[in-house]
Length: 110
Image 1 (cartoon, rainbow, N blue to C red):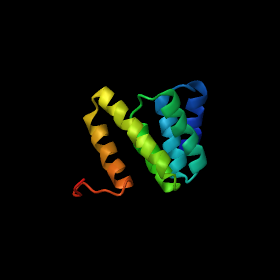
Image 2 (image 1 turned 120 degrees about the vertical axis):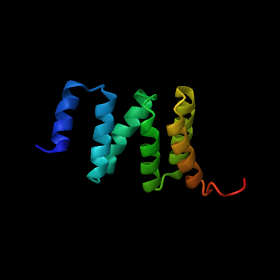
Image 3 (image 1 turned 180 degrees about the vertical axis):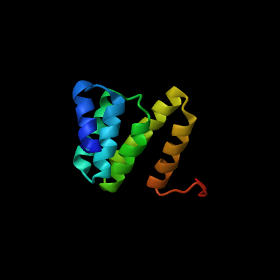
Image 4 (image 1 turned 30 degrees about the horizontal axis):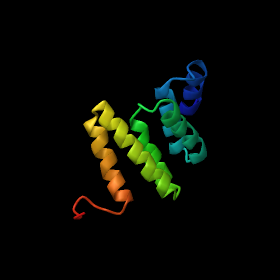
C-alpha cells in the first residue's frame, strides 16, 4: 500500500480533516499530479481558510502553472490570514514569495 493509498483511506473516514487534505495535496504534488493537488489546495483555502500553510504552497503551484495573478492573490490572502492569526513566521514567508513573484527582491528600493 502506497502513502497515497493510506492517505486516501484515512480521507474516506475523515473527509473534512484539513491536515489530510493538505497531506493529499502535497502527496499529489510530489507525484506530479498537479491537477489533483490543485483541487485539495483550493478546497483548503475555500473551506479551511485559517489553515495558513496552504497559501504558500498553493501560490507556488500557481506560479509553476504560469498563473501569476492567482499566485499573487493567494499570497495576499495568506498574508491577511497570517496577520489575523499573528503567525509571524508564515507572514514573513508569504511576504518573501510575494515580493519575489512581483519581481522584487528584499534588496530593492521601492
